Amino acid sequence: MTEKREFRRVLLKISGEALMGDGQYGIDVGTVDRIATEISQARQSGVEICLVIGGGNIFRGLSGAAGGMDRSSADYMGMLATVMNALAMQNALERQDIQTRVLSAIPMTTVCEPYIRRRAIRHMEKGRVVIFAAGTGNPFFTTDTAAALRAAEMNCDALMKGTNVDGVYSADPRIDSSATRFDTLSYMDVLSKDLKVMDASAVSLSRENNIPIVVFSIQSNGAFLKVLEDNENCTIIF
Ligand code: UDP
Image (cartoon, rainbow, N blue to C red):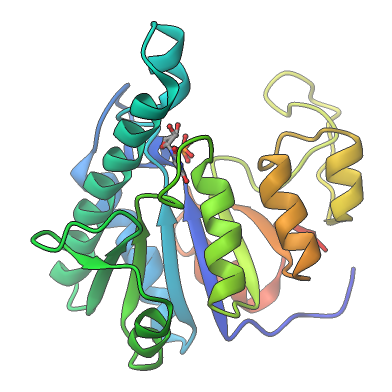
């Protein structure tokens, strides 16, 4: 095991699907509340937190394009889906008395603030949770890449990828019982073995900016705070 890392400011990436709960589509309010509690616990420990939430629970550009839509239009719809998720998460956090700001890469000033880097940093310094909505604002990207980009812009100590599995395994643990979890991996391992952790552009961007990616499960209670504190039950890519 490598030496324990101190995380002062982190970006948490949650896929849209993590908000569906047991459903097949959309937003499960109970699940959003539970994730908000995870964020609240971590924030109370003094860590500055910003979030990128995906949109796959509502709309993915690639499926729209597969159905015959123009890819760029479909991707804009996907980005709008992330704004809905961001508003749901803001609402859940504010119900737990956590000041939260949504900053959108696509300006929609009646709904939320536009993304301005220095403003985002200021919000975090004041202890607010910042949610970056609308991905990068550009089609042909994903929210994984948006997460790596914002983590670099915000000088985050880590990009925390909250998933359903507690790290990266040698094989799919649901299929192969002999699969083992990697404690650490290099960026190049992930890229050259094509491990499906995040897209290659997100991994490359994190590598260039020397930001570790921590893959952990956000499904068990207290998991986010615990992984920030002990760096266990996760895979750290660096
Ligand atoms: N998207 C985009 N540019 C971005 C981020 C997202 O075009 O910078 C679109 C893309 O169509 C994507 C959708 O938004 O399919 C939802 O994001 P993503 O698939 O990354 O969500 P997740 O899989 O994390 O739920």
